Image (cartoon, rainbow, N blue to C red):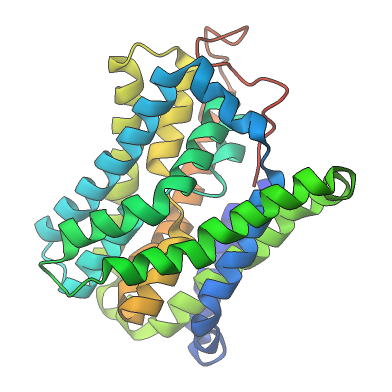
Length: 319
């Protein structure tokens, strides 16, 4: 409850702290991959094989959603960055954000928005599993002309900080189900602390850049997220999905794993390339919370059941 209610505000405060106290926050930047690995391990602990069952039952909704996530957001990131004339490092940063899998807080937003939680969980899980292969190829194809990109290095990094921790968490839950389920209530707090530290570190490392180009990058981030949310919903409409599934696809497409983008940018490019990810982390949690509040006021017409498995009891929301 605490994580869900105050997450957006805590991330915003972390950005302000990073900006006002860069000397204390910036030294945390090299530890971003480790912090992300802890977050992803926690995500793995919340996953179960049943989370993937919806793919077999309703493949159209899941495949359309994941396809939209890995086409709409990367292309938007690249297009917006070039339209605003951002320098090469920030172009790479925007593409990295767009090419990342679903955000770690998206399932909670979908749950609060009375969307299809089962579909949201499946999309987050599958896009995360595909990330080691898809993300490096997208970054290479879209940003390779701006800066040298090593797809193999990105692949290895995502294996280390995303896939391996997620799989380890999933296996541990299968092996020690009772113990893991006893600690599940505190996992959202672990993720919140991790994301807050990542945002503070990245903003602190880029304090001067935030002050000089922050407004332009912030505009790029707001456009990226807003268009992603809108186009994600449109994909659901064109795909003939019920209202609860449209809400889920909208949130999943618009909310990215900005922590991964920040970690990859810091490790393989420069701290400046992580700036879009840091600002995206702040903004998409604020916009996601606003959307959840709006949608929570009206139940989707299909709340009693949807073709994508609306909010089944087996698919509990994750942080």
